[in-house]
Length: 352
Image (cartoon, rainbow, N blue to C red; front, side):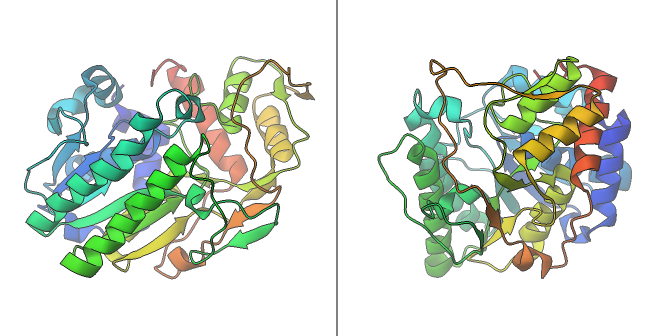
């Protein structure tokens, strides 16, 4: 797909551009890992958009191993990207001015089967990329997760960047959570000892048209898949847990603001606290947008998945990132409506 000709993605790119100042990227080299992931795809789209629409002359570099997925994601634009076909877990040497480390396996489906593959990009990959940043004096953005906050033992609260709960390093989920913590610690260490300008984005419930609705196990992706198929949306819990949802154009604006202006050595929640609903309310919204019904079904005891054990109301403060000038504009109804419109226009096979 030629994504810049898609009305949804093009409008998102225009909105990201109007929300920030990107002049410092002109003529620079920007390296992105995990380029065809849900979040990094919008980062890549925007860099290409800056070049093609606004003549920024950015050297867009990516690191990825799956050539098929890379070409499928970027289509005719793939040839405009300098892709390095190797693992992020290996030493890398390419001149660059900015690094965005977004490569990470982030699906609960793989935590049990491939915990080493989950952990290494966040630890070993982060180390090699920080060494690269130190070598070329590049500014570094690490994509972390709200999972680093750990378990608050059932407390309902709004979590600031300085708040932390407990974490069991031996749990199935910890190959992801603990390795992200370790990656953050490396970022802080490289800033303190070597002066590498590292900034951390703690990402919570970001969503957008680039999610893989066939393979993404998260509830909102399942709801979208049901609605697109004209099926009733099945909710396998009471749906009372509340979460905040941040549309990807707002999130991408925040990512670039952190890359350019975030305070080195610090972390920022990237979330939209103002758009908080229960899972049941989200299901009702998507059902209404998709002209289907929301029904509650009993989960089979044979179903095998890692249950979300977070408190029913665990939100993340976005005050710190808003202090940098980031505004969150897209509400839940508009955001999920855009995703449904996107997939109805191009077909759900587009990102597979």
